[in-house]
Amino acid sequence: MRRWLALIAVLLFTFPAAAEEPKLSQAELDKLLAATDEIAKTVSELRKLPIKRPIARGVMSKPEILKRLVQRIDEDYAPAEIAAEELALKRLGLLPRDADYRQMVLDLLTDQVVGFYDPQTRELYIADWADPGMQRMVMAHEIGHALQDQSFDLKRFTKPNRENADEQLAHQALVEGDGVALMIEFMFREMGQKADPWADDTIVNAMGATAGLAGGAVFDKAPLALRDTLLFPYTGGLRLIAATRRTRPWSAIDAMFARPPASTEQILHPAKYEAGEKPVALKTPPPPSVKRWKKLYSNVVGELLFSVFLREHGARKEDADRAAAGWGGDRLHLFAPGDGPGLDDVLLVDFSVWDTETDATEATEALEAALAGTFDDVEGKTSTVERRGKKVLLVIGQPADLPRLRDEIWKTWR
Image (cartoon, rainbow, N blue to C red; front, side, top):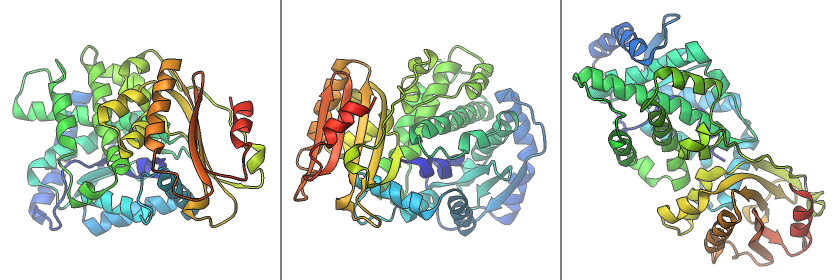
C-alpha cells in the first residue's frame, strides 16, 4: 500500500497548506530565484555536502504542478496497478468504498505542496502561492534534496518498489527526514540561534505536533491512511535523523544512504535501525484453493500501516502503536475470482510474523477487535484472524466454498 503515493510525494515539501492565488509578485519571485546560489552555499556548508554542479530552479503555478504530478504517475504506473492498490486499501477499510484513489491523492498533494525537487530532471521548483515568509526555508529544503541527489543519486530511492511499499516509505523517510533536519538547522542559522536543535526532543516533538495541524481543507478530509502516509516521511524521518545528529556529525547521515532503512519499523524505532534488525523474509506461494483465481496485488503492510489499520477500526493511537510495535515482517495478497471483480468479491490475505509470541498475541487481539462487526457484512464471506506461535494469519472475505484455504496457507507459507 501507499506505493505510488510514496513515490509521487517524495521530495515534495508539504507542510502548510497553500492559498489559491500567488502571494509573491514576479519581481519577488525573481529575487528569490536569484538568491538560490547564496542559499545553496549556506546549505552546502551546513549539510557538509558539496555543490557539484549548478542547480536548475524555477517557479510553478498550481496547474503546472498538477500537470507534473500527473505526468509522473502516468510514467511510473499503469492504471491497473493503481486500481489494484485502491481495491486493497478499500478491502482493508482504509478508503471509502466510493473513493477515487488517484484523484484523491492528486487533490491532496496539490493542496499541500509548496516546493519540490525532481531527481528525474534535476530541477527544483517553488510554488508561486507559497507564503512569502516560508520561501527561503522551502528553498533550503529543496536545495538540500538537490545536494543529496548530487552525492547519493536520489533516483535509487524513488525507483518504484512494486513488492514492498513499506521499504519504499522508509527510504522516503530517510530522504525527507534529512531535508527537514537540514531546514531546521538553516532556520536556526537565519535567526542567529546558537542553540543545538538536537540537544533534546523539543524541536522534534514540536514538528510532530504541528505537522498535522497545518493541513488545508483537502488534507483534513482525507482518509487517515493517506494523511499518515504523507506526513510520516517528514515527522518519522526527522525523528530518525535527529536521533543520529544528537551525537554524531552529518557524515553519519551520509552513511545511511549507503545502508538505507528497510522498513517503517526502523524509522519508528531508530535503535532497531542501528542494530540492523531487518524484516523477516516470507515465502507465500498461491494456495491451491485459489489456483484459478487472479492475484491482483502483493505488498508489505509494515508496522506503520498496521497501526493505521487498527486506528481506523476503533483503536486508540497509543493502543494501536503498542500492538503494531512487535511487527517482524508480513506479506499481503489480494486475489479475485475473475477480471473486473467487485469489492466484495476479492479475497485479502495477510501473513505476518512477530518478534515474540507475546507480540503476536497482542496483535491478534487487536486485529480481532478491528474485525468485529466491520468485515462480516457480506453473506457467505467470513473474515478471521488466527495465531500460531509468532505467526498471525489475517483473512478478509473468505468465501464459504474455500474451506481449506487457511489450512493450505499454514502448511505452505513460511
